[in-house]
Structure formats: structure tokens, C-alpha cells
Picture 1 (cartoon, rainbow, N blue to C red):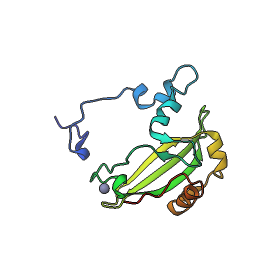
Picture 2: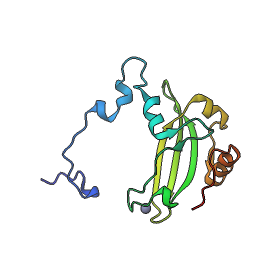
Picture 3: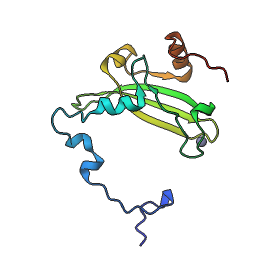
Picture 4: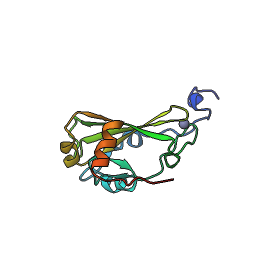
Length: 144
Ligand SMILES: [Zn+2]
């Protein structure tokens, strides 16, 4: 059967998501955050001025790794969702693979305090972020 789904990824897709699975934000019960902070804290460090990954970011195309200095931080862009969200503050964080040029983009929910500190609605280029993190002495230079 050729329904055209999944052709672009080289694999047949047999899974058909429900509306609840596609848009879980619209179906959350109670306080509506669905344990979002615990989930984010597993992957992102939100204790500093900017969200930084807690894992070795890896290119999905060529498998280059951040720990091999092949994934470069690119852009941190803060914005606020207009909908009545309990946690409306976001930072889109992108990285670029230095080997194949693929760009990875993450939409990270961030605390309001971080959003406020980072001059709302502005984007920070990798040079700015380097300077901010260095100033905060968040990272120690490692010799390899
Ligand atoms: Zn790559």
C-alpha cells in the first residue's frame, strides 16, 4: 500500500496519532503542566541565565557529537506564547552540525525569571551566549 505517508523518511508509517497525542497541551488535566518542569530538568540546565543541554547533543543526520566539538551553539531566541498557557515562556535553542550543516532546533519552556532577565523578545547569537556563559563562569575550559 502506498499512501504517501512516510515516503520522505524512507520508512513506512503505520502509527496514526490521536488528537490527544498530537496536542497534549490541549488535553492536560488539573494544573495543566503535566510535570513539565521535571521532564525539562532531565535534559536542560535552567539554573543559569540561558538554557543549556545536559546531554551530549548528537546530529541526527551524521551522528557528530558535541563532545567532539562538532556541534556548535547557534541561537537562543526568547518568546512568550500568546495563549493562556500556565508556562508561556519559551526559548528556542538551536545548534548547528559543523560536519554536515544540519540545524537542530529545541523549543524549551523556561522559568519566567529567566525570561525576564534575558530582555524579552530578543535573540542571542552564539557569540553573545559564549560571552554570557563565560562571564557567569558557568563553564570551565577543558583541555583536551
Ligand atoms: Zn551532521
